[in-house]
Length: 344
Ligand code: HEC
Image (cartoon, rainbow, N blue to C red):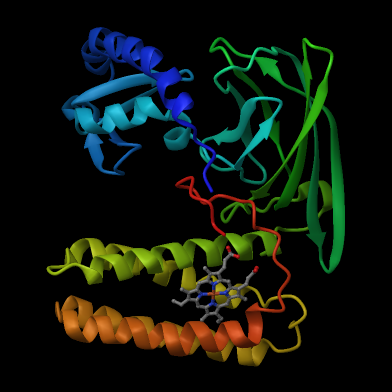
C-alpha cells in the first residue's frame, strides 16, 4: 500500500505552480550559464539529455533538475521526493506522513549521504512538530560475526523548505541501518518513527577501514540485488507482453537482469553457506537461460521470447527459490525499491 493521500498532492499543487513559474523564469538563464553540453539524466523518465537541450528545469533542495519535456517536469513537481531520493519507506505518525529519503538517491558505505525527513500533515492535522531527534544503528557483518554501530543524537537540522529536516552522515560499513526518529509535537505528545534502510557496499572502494576489513557482499546487498533483479524481470515481461514490443527497451531491461545475475555468485544465502556448489550451478544455469532469451529477443522473435521468459520463471527462478529462498529470513518487507514502490 502506498501512503500517498490525495491531500498530499493537492497540498503540493500551489507550491508546484510557484516552483514551475520560478523555474520558467530562472530556468533558461541558469541552463545557459552552465555548460550547455553537460549531459544530465531526466530524473523522471531516465533519458540522458544535454542541459542545453532540456525543455525545462526545476531547482529542488539546492540542486537543479533538467527535463526532456514539460510532462516530466510536471510529474516531478507533483512528487519531487520520489524522483530525487530514495524513499526508504513512508510511515504515519500523529496525523503526519513521514518520509525518509536520501541524496544521492541511495546510501553507500564510505561516502557522505544526506538523509532527509519530510513531514507532510494530513488535512485536518493541527498539531505542529516542534523537534525531531534521531538515532541510528548500523548492522553489518565482520566475517561471520554480526556487528552493530550506534549513532546517537543524529542532528536533524530544519531546512529552508517547510516540513523538511536533514543531516549529513557517512557509514563506514555496508549493511542495514535501523533509524529511529522521535517527533515532539506542540500538544505535548511524542511519537517514535522507525525506519530501516540498506547501506550499500562500495564496489570500487575498500571500506570498513574502521575495522580493518574490506567490504564484502552482505545480506542487505543480497536483498537489494534480488529485489532489483525481480523488478527488471517484470519489466521485461511487461514489454514482451505488448503486441509490438519495443525491443531496445526490453533488451535494456534484460541487460539489467543480467547485470544483477552477475552478482549472485558473490554470495550464498546464509543457512546455506556449505552449499556453494549447488548455488553456483543454479546461478550459472540461470545465466545461460538469460543468454538464450537475449538471443531470441535480439532476433525479435516475440513468440519464442515469451515462451522462454515463462520457461525461465518456471525452471530457473522457481527451482532456486524452492531450495534457497523460502527459508531465507527476509527483513525487507517494509523497504521500497528505488522507484518508490512497495516491494511486498
Ligand atoms: C540462483 C538462485 C536464484 C535465482 C536463479 C533466482 N532467485 Fe530470486 N531469490 C533468491 C534468493 C536466495 C532470494 C531471497 C533473498 C533474501 O531474502 O535475501 C530471492 C528472492 C527473490 C525476490 C524477493 C525479493 C524481496 O523483496 O524479498 C524476488 C522478487 C525474486 N527473487 C525474483 C526472482 C526472479 C524473477 C527470478 C528469475 C528471473 C529469480 N528471482 C531467480 C535466489 C534466486
